[in-house]
Length: 469
Image (cartoon, rainbow, N blue to C red; front, side, top):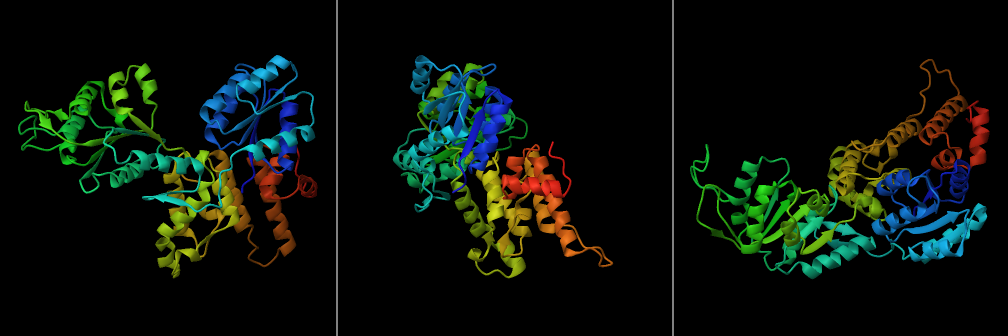
């Protein structure tokens, strides 16, 4: 299991950094933020298991951030800190969902048992259970398994389903599963994306057109609703449908009929509608960009696919699944007969676990495909997975440089000069400098990245004349 991830939020720099260093030394992966706004950005972009937050913060208070955490991810435990301890504030914090409360000043030694109890009390994301498959989807996380249960429960009804989730989470695959489990499985499953289409094109594609309806309409054409008659229709990016066309879609949802573009005769269809969006439709309703009546007609059954960063226990399973799926890329080049022969090195897997995956499962699949194209057919190593796609952060890019330095190292001079000890020393110095740069000169985090004790890092920095500032 990867180390638990802790987010420390405190406007006192000394306390914040001290906690970061000492909790890192205790084996935790620690992020830190000086205020609620910075903390939200970290919380929204990375997996977090525990939040340790001061009640008094500049701007939004710690209690406000507690409410945000519990609204977004109720499973994340929160311990609140304060120098202004009162019975009332402690009770209020617990009522609002805090796991515990600690009064400043305190030592990290006093905090650690609270963290350990919190982590022990959480329902575990079981990783030793058998993976569960649903169509082309595979998962071991409890959040995805709950989603699978919901899909099985609603798939055989004819009710409209709204699929919500970020890009790359697998909404189209989930729609295929819903159709395949329904009584309409033998009938057509039609996919259509509304993204970036002109309104006139969009209307014709959805509802069809009559001959002569517009320039170039040389024959009658059936739209996606007619093609899906008797089966299921997936409308992806439904939020991209203009307001005037939303009226026509609402009529189809309510009355199961429409007119083709340029036509006057109603066309009746029997279609199970599945809509997908990566955006907050209710927010668009409030902004006047999506019809409220259509929203409530589509929002009969909502299924939400959690982003990959919220279920990191699925990353190793999915990575190995994609190795098996795409192993032919490496097999053809290196004579590897079976996907099982290709391994993912522990260091490479650590990098996959640390990435925030803004592109979700799709991004992970692309990273594995690329790694297989460059690996030797036996093992995927760090230099094969870095940089982590077009979404790579500065930290990821630095990690890529670190991995390259680790695996490539400085070359011996052509004339043969340069001892092995000198070469290893050069490599070690480069790795330390890169790790410090990546971690903002935080020695505790750099030592954790390098896999050595902080005291060893300090000794090596002194040895190589590296400034600790």
